[in-house]
Length: 234
Image 1 (cartoon, rainbow, N blue to C red):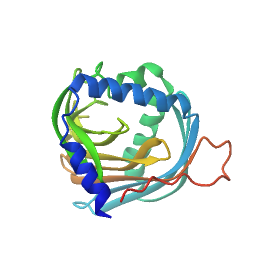
Image 2: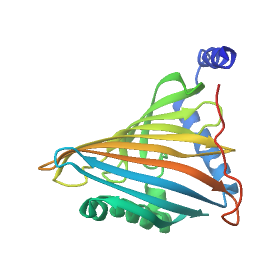
Image 3: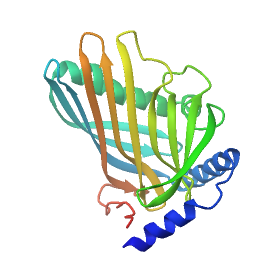
Image 4: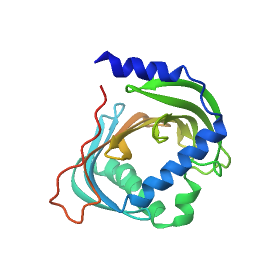
């Protein structure tokens, strides 16, 4: 059980490529994966909780992705505060839907040299796999960009984790937002697994938002195929 982790640690001792090479390989690997990812369906569970006013809401959503990047969403069930669902959960879904429909918006939010300045920080083991850790500084104040840290898998050159905050505060009412995005390997593809964000909102106080991703079906024409299970690490 310890051998794979030991080998991964040994790999991190090797000199890392320079930042430009890491980003170039990441872009090439991402393009290669996108070329074969025709479609997928997956389930998402959105949860929002505001402790100050004891408000909670949850929404179960089915997402359908089709190349080149369009996403359609179907709300399967929802519960909790109607106001929170309308103002937070449905707005998140609609924003992602609209961004996915426009190539220029997808391009403007991509993790790429066109949108970010990157700087190499270190190499570390993440979930049993070596990863390069880079800082990411947005080049514009696009509120859909972020400022933070990116983990890039050293073998697949895929983004496996992001920690940060929006490049621009969404509104006057929001004092601070921090988030963690985690990705997991499903066959040859790295897809979202968990998003967690914490917001400090004027008047409303602290709010937690969690999005769980599960039940992926990849490149399947219908709904009845076997699920795509993540690659397990030792």
